[in-house]
Image (cartoon, rainbow, N blue to C red; front, side, top):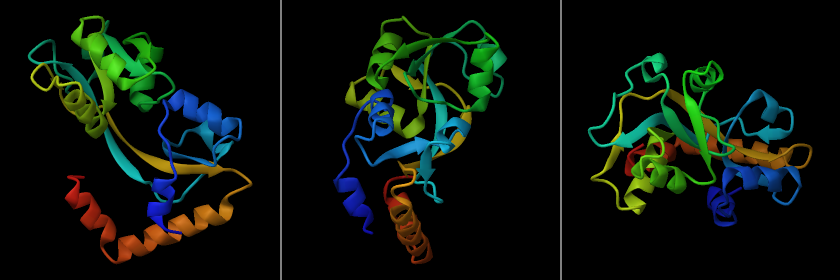
Length: 193
């Protein structure tokens, strides 16, 4: 399998819609998605993660406290999230305990616009994706990363369970070879990862 073939045939949809397409059998897989207990029962994940992500808070430049390592210091804050995404166990616990309030949006760009408008206090996102979204919206002078990562997690290629076991095996073999020959390191370095 060629990694470029997988990437070239993919499309991009909001996460909740992509998962619905997956569950309806309209797509063969999801690129990339985090493993959760519930997802492991209905999705075939490749052995190798495709992406390592630091989840960080974005906020208005110079406003409010930076996140250091204690989510309780942000008690009462409203955090913009993208519908259908997960942001790690620590964040989920802070939301479940009532420490943080959520404000859902279908896209990260919409959450960032809410931040700019003062409708949410912070937005959580993976660092790389969030920084790109801020650049795409032309808000680099107004919005910045506010503190340390909340959590680091890995995302995977998920394929239809019971259908694509051979493809998953070949994908993992290709990544094994890319790791051995240094290709993964070179790609990561070229993209600042």
